[in-house]
Amino acid sequence: MLTINTKMRIYQACVRSILLYCSETWTYALLYKHQEHKLNAFHLHNLKKILGITWQDRILNKDVLAKANLPSMFALLSQRCLRWLGYVVCMQDGRIPKDILYGELLAGSRPTGRPLLRFKHVCQRDLKSGGSKSRNVSV
Image (cartoon, rainbow, N blue to C red; front, side, top):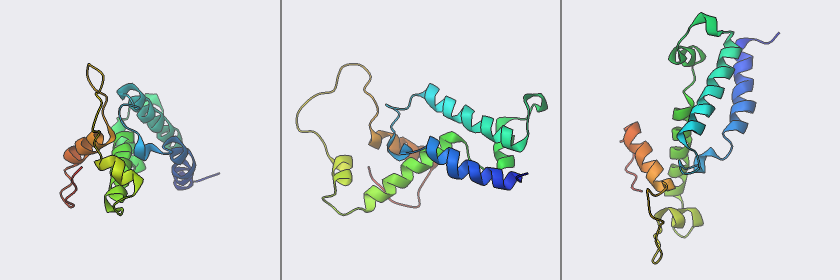
C-alpha cells in the first residue's frame, strides 16, 4: 500500500509532467478556455482520487488544492510560461527564440476579426496578473 505522499510524487512526476509537456510555449490561441478548464478538472479529479475525497464529501476545489499543497492548473500553466520567458530573456542576442519573441513582421497583415493572442501577449497578461515586480522584463 502506497502512502499519500508517494502517490502525490508519482502523480507530479509521471501524470502531470506528461499532461503539461511543452506547455511553456502554449498560447491561448492554442489553448482555449474550455480546454484549460478540462485540464483543471482532470487535475482536481486526480487529486481527489489520491486523497480519497468523494463528491459526497462536498469539499471545495480550493480546499482540495490546499490539502494537496499544489497550485491549480491555471497557476501551473502561467508559471511554466513565465519560466520559459525568463530563459528566453536571458538568452544571447541572435538566438532564434529570442529573435522570434522580440521580432516584428515588416510586411503582411493579420486576418480581420479578433486576432488570436500571440505568445508575448499571453506573457504580458500573465506578468500583469501575477504582480511580478521582482524583475524588469519587457516583452
